[in-house]
Image (tube, rainbow, N blue to C red; front, side, top):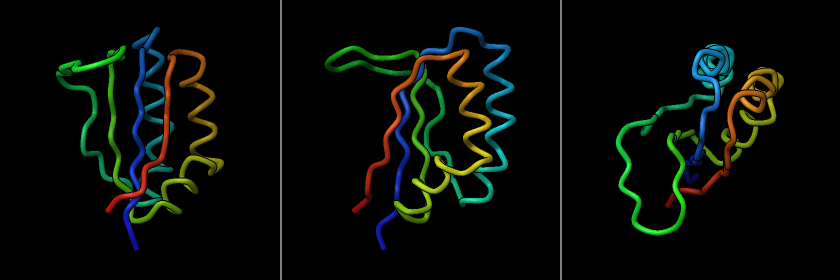
Length: 95
């Protein structure tokens, strides 16, 4: 079964409140076996428009990744994130 990956590109508008999102999201990530591969860090833009924060999270499967996003635990955190940041998020199937 291929692994699933969240790819998130984020511009944070309120860094202090974003910490609340990170704390609120932790239980969902733990429940669904998330492993952070990239979280913030330096970015080199090669093409297109970039965002300030880029995150790659590995899950045991695509289904785990999708279920994590739709879980009540994560949706509570997502409400905070949506108030304090602009983002694109997607799930990619691994090879």
